Length: 354
Ligand code: AHM
Ligand code: MG
Image (cartoon, rainbow, N blue to C red):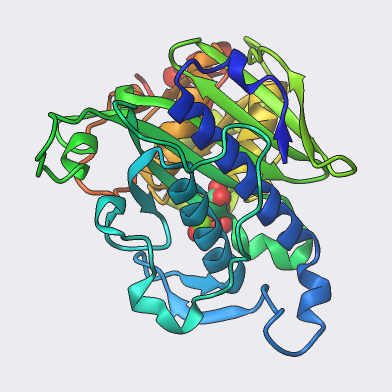
């Protein structure tokens, strides 16, 4: 697997290695999704799309592909030799890689789904760590997985935090670095991969203040840099929200939806996979909303908020505070999110009386 011109976005070799490994992981997940119906039609261990007969920390049913994708992500992050710890939507506890963590102890009967490691042409693992920087990655390995059975787009989402060690003999739990009093401002880079009509990897770096996109060319197994500097349009024509929950929305939210419907220039789209809905919002403009607080801060809201903000848009909570300013107290904490083009977000704020 190759990812074109990755070094233009990052200077730290440990981070370049990590991003190359995550890109590889996304290729493996993309491949698995595209053949799941074929695997599903066969008997035996190749079946990835069925239910895994287990639930994750949020009590949601896990699909075998969720677990497979989690394993692929963990393996990739471990192999990068760049991470001290991981947070996954699929596992309750923080995964401390310094203690050889990363196995899914509570769900042992599902282990062994991930394939053996694939090789990268760029900065593969296995080198001396020395004084290199270390990172913590929070990820949702397969967001929107209930859509896979119907051939609908899904994705992976991740955020990367730098772990600042205090030196040899450091016994702090790295998670303290990510949580209180930290906020989304400490996400140093974030990204998602959308498995749709194409497989697109999009990464935002705080340092370069740039959002960059690559498209997987399956014929050469290469991520081709297709979008060198993404800006979200100042105004878009699409609002994206699950209106089936309208009876639970605030008066302000209802007002915004009503205004959108009354406007001759607005229309609606809602895939039901956050990655697909945010990807479209980033490229076409408009707004995306999940006001009911289902989405998780560390690996759904923060990364998407960073992407949108770096691209020139805005992401806020229900009370109008910037998503990235929220302090998170537990690793699977949820929050309300509204994000999108600046001018559409101004309309929303007026409706929410913010
Ligand atoms: P998941 O992480 O369990 O897959 O749930 C997250 C998904 C998002 O991708 C999407 O925005 C949302 O759930 C859709 O929820 P709903 O069906 O309630 O609209
Ligand atoms: Mg998920």
